[in-house]
Image (cartoon, rainbow, N blue to C red; front, side, top):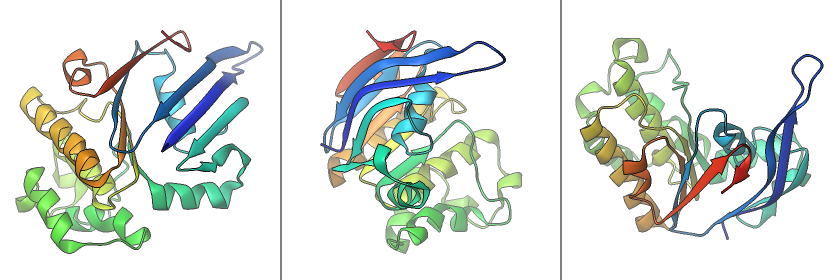
Length: 218
């Protein structure tokens, strides 16, 4: 099992009141499986993905990623899990402004020690970025920057791909192409794909769907 999360609870305390965001969420993700996580804004989708990405810690519950219980790890060990196991695509592009598109695409794979120029080149072609590799992020549209962020996550051939609204800045045709590419990677490499999305059309492409409502899976 690539992801095995059990009874995850998470609350935040803005001001004087505590708000429960996740209320006992449990889910699994198997190799090669594609899972869509749907839910309204504020339902806890992004919080859950941040926890599964080892970017934050739950208040209680356990999360195992590829056999390792990350809730028991320190900061350095969680960073190593993110570097070596997980591909992240979040709503913020987080591209490095001083690097070209080509260098941004290769960045995560280089950190993980899995840089493959041929694979990165094929990704550039499939994402429509082949003519843009010498540009810098500030020279790209929002949709182009999003495609670079997706390509950067895919370039490292991650075991687990976590995507939070990865096609939110793309038109419908490009969204379909990018979604198909992420699904193809999971199929080809045995990676697991968990994608949070508002789009029921894209969610229907996944092998399984879960709906998050008021911090619980419905």
